[in-house]
Length: 96
Image (cartoon, rainbow, N blue to C red; front, side, top):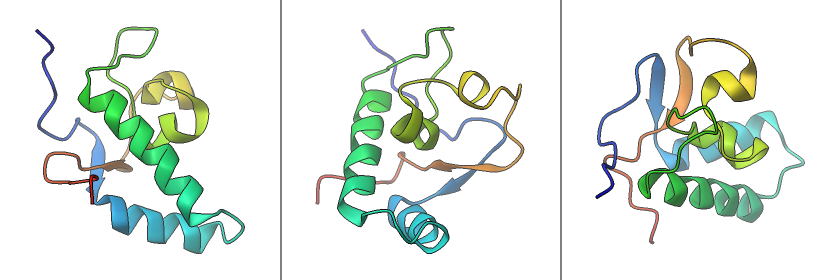
């Protein structure tokens, strides 16, 4: 039986899917909204299904949406997040 995480991972700043999409589009005006949302929803689905990075750690949703399924450390090369954003999936419903 898979254990699905229900709390925010340590070191991350929680952000809703909608708020993250707005911030990302503001910072990256050339990105298509629908594509970004689709990539994030795929990563959220993988996270909820218990996907792990090749190193065994839980995936970082935001990074995984852009770089493939991986944890924060493997995607960024930094050992721990320092208040980096992560989608708060505990209260998020992406099945609108």
